[in-house]
Amino acid sequence: MDIRAIIRELLFEHDCVIIPGFGGFIGNFSPARIDKATGMFHPPVKQISFNRNLNHNDGLLISKISVVTGLNYGDSRRLVEEFVMLIKGKLSRGEKVVFDHIGWFVNNRENNVQFEPEANINYFAGSFGLESFHCLPLQGYDIRKRVVRHIDKEPLMNQHTARNLWRAAVIVPLLALLVAIPLKTDLFKAKVEATSMNPLVTAEFESNRKAVDAAVVTLPAPVTETVEETPAKVPEPAAVAKGQYSIITGSFKSEQNALEHVDMLRAEGFTPEIKQASNGFYRVTAARCKDLETAISTRDSITGKFPGAWITRL
Image (tube, rainbow, N blue to C red; front, side):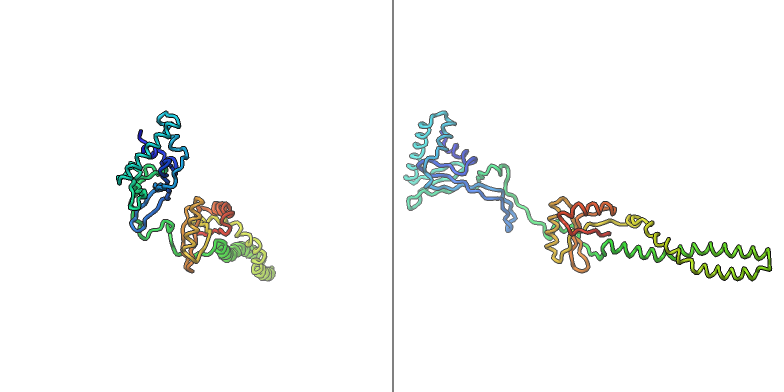
């Protein structure tokens, strides 16, 4: 009966396995770690240590032997007692006692039991199939810095306001001129026809021409009411097709703060970008949209988590 093999099997399932009358094996868990000096990646491990003071019978080992061998509890306990006597006898004679894949025991100069664990065995079942590996870091590369560009763009609403004023300044005089020219031409045509029919009324039509000239000068005033509505008829999306809309969720003086904000956006499923403005601030773009309607909808959907989000056009 190989009691050592049963102990080894129990160490994969339990953190403490006691050999009654001898001592207990303890599993010490260590998380995964990276050795930056050597570039080694190590998986989580459970290493074994030994405590001779844990020598009371907790029933774990004897019960396992009883299940494996089919012996009753009393016979299984006697097997363990004989095993312990054999180990202690070898140690007292100065011999080394080896537990395969666990470690080995020997008495030191003070006649105390000393345990040396097997360093290459990992008893953490969750790391099954995982081995340490070597990987050098990529120099000067940070995936969070996907795009860094200098920009100097005004907010979207300011650009629209300036563009509308410019359109109005151009369209109003043109419309006034288009309305005035046909009206003035028709009035003078009527004067010429009347003069050719009756030369005696030339003086009357001369006065009419002066009145018409005065009327033409004052026409642009009422036309202004129609011109004021003209900007509303020009659809804003006509200029939108030339660019894209960006949804900005933050502007930071510190690049590190901007990178942390990028990580937050990535956790929400976005593909963010960092753009450095000419004033030195780092703007973080959460998403880009081809049209204004989609941009507004996207911005409204994230204002719960990013209330300061706004839209700019590239």
